[in-house]
Length: 279
Image (cartoon, rainbow, N blue to C red):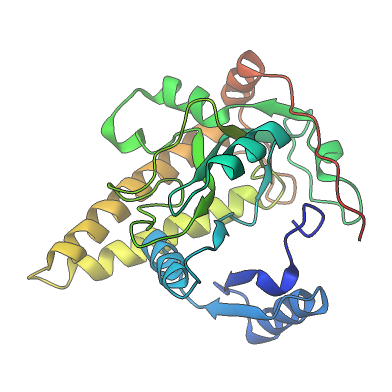
């Protein structure tokens, strides 16, 4: 993102410590600060609602003419110049928005490799496919899978009506994505650590759901969180069951034959890699 022109001093990172120790969390914090990032928050617990609330709180702290780029750590946004130019030309106030199509990046074989430092990610994961669309078709179109969409808000000009409903979408009443103003999102979520991370995320949702269930009388917000947790837990359980070969050794995780077949059928041409600004 620095290469695309985003200043490191304008970035705000949220680190989920999870099962990592305090020393590992300090190392991650220090690595970001060496790159010029000065706003780093570490949280012990992961939850979609926590992440949403943090970004919405951040939006309220921004000047009214600010632009927000909201990306997960495994997402690299690409902004085609014609799209950005049209958005900027029409941006008279809050609500200008650029959305993107999510393209999953995968290795060229079933075995999921660890990420190699110093080697371009697109070279390590040269296969592109809308994995979530393929999974959605295989699992059926039930309500619990409705959030497995391929579109996400990439860039938005903030204002009073701009608040996120989820990692992908804005609250009702906010700006709406235009069908012809779309970028691309390279989604790097299938490496050697992905199976273990998916199981950790499922366990985090189980813990959050258990805590919500114990509260008895619940407010409307708590009920929303409960439904969100149930949907997310269902998604990740199905994801793990379909995606990964459970008989593969832990040190060499791999995709299941069924998932790999679905991915091969759904392959698409990868977007061209963006030209980076000279530092």
